[in-house]
Image 1 (tube, rainbow, N blue to C red):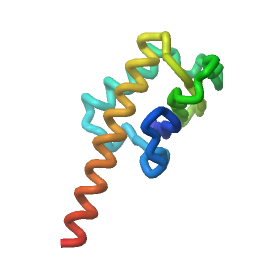
Image 2: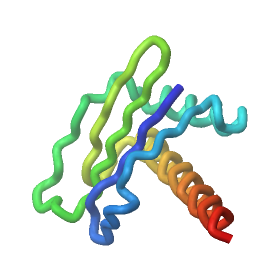
Image 3: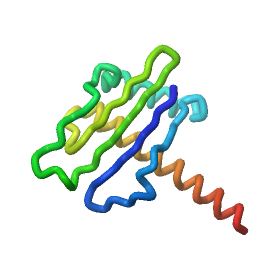
Image 4: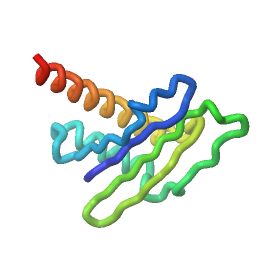
Length: 115
């Protein structure tokens, strides 16, 4: 399963960090991959509507774009504002942590290359 995750906007928006990150569950430890796949299932990801409405006065809200691709199907969802569903909220939280880990690893690799 491949997951593309992108976050834009928000009060402290940093354009350099809004690039999409791709997470391949085949590259994750088995436990993390299984947990992520369970979160996608629990969130009913493939049944979510493609977009959610931005709340009134929502210019400062973050917008998350998630694309999940499996051999059988692919689905993209854009979420904006407060996420009401606890499973979807946990999925976004987990993807945010995985993105941070991936960015941290990339920065560490760049530092090693410059030494």
